[in-house]
Image (cartoon, rainbow, N blue to C red; front, side, top):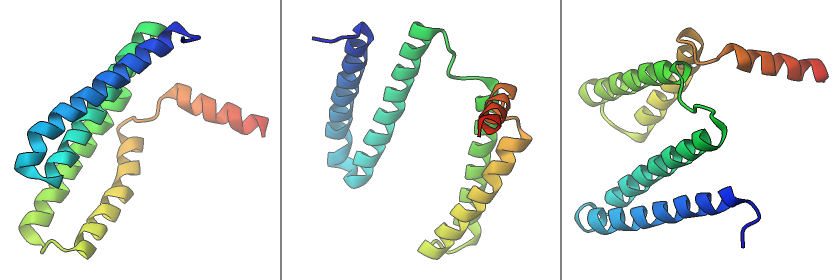
Length: 134
């Protein structure tokens, strides 16, 4: 039925994620409504990506999580918490305020990536080799 044996594994992982989403929806929607559905979906996507990453590591040996990813992610999470704290404590939460805070985050996030090592040497070499071709 499958041409590549790993395809069956990915289909099983996806099926597991669908069942996990259904269970979370049944547990969270009655109590929390649309917010519960959103949380269930977000948790399911994170779980699905972690399972896909584990399968990628098993198949290729490529480790999907590095310090170059973790450190900027941690700093960005701290920035999100700080922006949330400022918004809740010092501003009236309205749509324009949320848009401004999002733009503020989007301006600072590239700085975080560049400052805290979110780009590795291999990625720079890849971009440079691509530029040399064209």
